[in-house]
Image 1 (tube, rainbow, N blue to C red):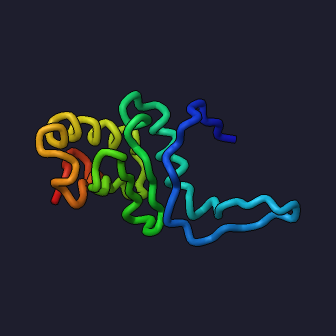
Image 2 (cartoon, rainbow, N blue to C red):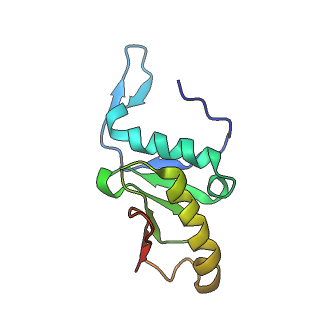
Length: 120
């Protein structure tokens, strides 16, 4: 099983199904949140992302996204993995652009494409 060392994890939102075990414990559908779990694992390996990522939304698996507490922009990660690289690109974009223009300047920052970052 995956064990997270950090006690502060981003809030998980947008899931559709919550199951109940016989003992009353609630749990999420693992298929629905599998990409989010992989993103959480990559976040734990990132010195930067673990401190700024405040939410991960799974409502559309193709557009799995995160938000930070400092910005309204959606950081779109998608569901094709490679989250370590995407978090690294997020950090570069944050340091080079967000710190200058502000986090509320953008609606989204799309990190799904290799070697390219799209922002609007």
